[in-house]
Image (cartoon, rainbow, N blue to C red):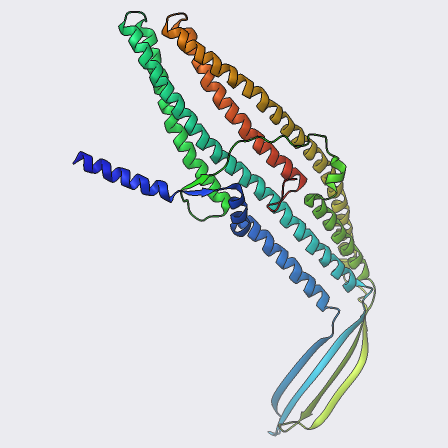
Length: 418
């Protein structure tokens, strides 16, 4: 019965393992482009801006209306009068102080702003996606390290037990070795939970609605590109965050001109044609044509306030652009520095791990023949385990720092490493 239970368990485990989906970084990029809710929201915001531009343009085009009516009226004498009419009317804007032109230009800048905002959103999504992908890679790698450490601790315990049983080691060392194994086994369990949590995080960043077993396919290979200090001022000119602020400033400038144009008269050409009669269908032709001009005289200071508001919005947009440029340049330089520091740190940690592995190899042989104490050997073994984890953390941090640098430059989900 026990054998049957074990076989069933192994069968279920093999099915789950087979169902685990492997995703490369390129796979994640493609899926996030399609499914991430933040990108969908930014895309729909762009669609709204495009529609607003069409709405603004429509004010400059002829406005054509049609009407059909029928009515019956009864006089005091009791007589009734029927009236039927239909008509078509048209109105064309001739002059409004270029207000409509400014509104169209403002809407055009809003479309540009929405496009840049989409790129900014895509850039932010790329960073979050990369962090989640690296976190899952790290969790998978850490699980392997902890399992390897636990196996090594188990072998070390056997060696200590043999020396204890031979009377060459005291009970405290044996208990310490057992505690080390217990700690290592706990870290294995903890690492498995970290994998589950990292899978959840990556699932969210992919835009999936539910958790599915996934595995990040990749490595922690740190590349050493051209490390010459870039021209941050030049790179800032194509940063979508800054370009968005520039478009918002231009939109505010056109909004100010549009508000100022409200003080000028509006001139329309209008015409209508139709028929009216007391019988249906009506036969009497009715038409009209003319030009109308309107200029409000007093509105309680509304237009003056609108101009003041538009001017304040323009001044704010100017200040935001200036502040945004300084922030973009500083962020790029800061993230580039962090990336370069992380690359250098990887080299240092690799040397520490190489040294720790060599020391552990020698120490194990020395302890087996009684040349060093258990306490010294234990410290060296702890240093080896710590060096493996530190190098893993440093490599993962380097990949994230690189992603932060790409995001600071404005790299989107379509970014191609050069």
